[in-house]
Length: 205
Picture (cartoon, rainbow, N blue to C red):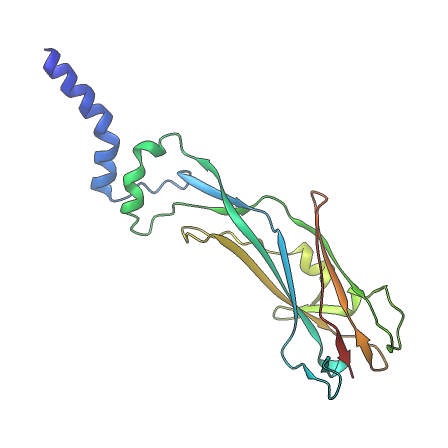
């Protein structure tokens, strides 16, 4: 009797693993999920800039200028299913199952762009020119509208360690006269944090 009782207990403990092996994978999206918070902002001039003769400064036609922004975040494990110890075999038998959700921990409140016009530029330094930029996504949209309808990435079962989002901000209302500029871009998050970066100098001709 003791032998049979012990056999039943062992069989009961092994049952979850047996089910996983037979099924190949337990498609339970709550097995684990990841969270991310944007922590890095990268900027670069859109393609088309070239070195201005004799100055070493990038130059581009003022009517064709844009900034590419990239937001990056490292993902971190937020929660694991209490039964995950019994489900470890599932990771060896994925078969397309949804094992992870990647979701944002915070959201963007606003984006601002300030023109740090340098010596030799016709415009004043420190002007907020956010309203002069547009984001193209099938149609030209203002920055504020872009933020309101921003779709946060939700990567499922991809195993990605980083989350990246790119956008092209196009200067639709350039300065009237040529000059040297740097643009400070700030991304404000709803939790009060912010990400700030400044472009390399560029001469808008």
